[in-house]
Image (cartoon, rainbow, N blue to C red; front, side):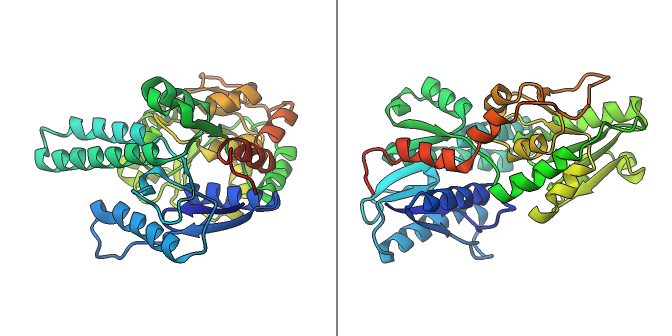
Length: 359
């Protein structure tokens, strides 16, 4: 089959949505499909934020109008406008639970409605418009591909009209990254007793539980003077919310951004991972921290339930106990490595998302 895999924005592996699209495209190509991985690019600087999703949608439409026909087009639901050129099979593939993200942001805006009524009302109306566009995309799609069982079950329960279209896929790391993290795992040693080196990875956004994280590290730092905390990949936003005394004392280290090549060394110098999301698409940082051999203390969001079934010893509830067991994880890695391998993910994609079309 000739398949188009679309990414909104830039096609860089440091960006979560692009990373998933690139891995999927490579895995499908390895199975004999002709796959084009295409990114819509960055909108013009003068384009106001509320118009950018329409700009991306028109970029998709323009590309399809000029490219050779595709048998299937895989794209975010918000990108699925009416009458896509070429009449391909349309796969609305999720990389995040859009409606839950909007709900998390809406709760924050409602909390500020009294202080900033016009701004909050505008953001709430904009979020409602985006939700409507996502719902319309799901209605136009032939297949709705959910990222993990949590999202699939939520949609089946709350949007019963989607049930005939629903399928799921899991997430995983690229083969080269898995090999590098296996080496980190093999060399991992227990903490030296001077304190726990905690690691949190993600962009600084409300739905990722940044409020939970700040509360946890503030309390923990007060009673565990040897503990340190690294917040990585957070951009500049974390500096506004993390207590300045902890930053000044070096108890909390911010790494606004890092290259994918630096990930193994970042993971190797920490003892335990933190995952605090209220709502999450999957949370590829879960795979990264787990595969490096560290225990991860996680809220029940994103891919946690799917991964806990595969690595129950390694994935533990957040918040951690006062005296957590931080010995390197001893686990049977076989089930996880088979289930989260991209060749298997691609094979299941063929059987679900591409059902009814032949090569």
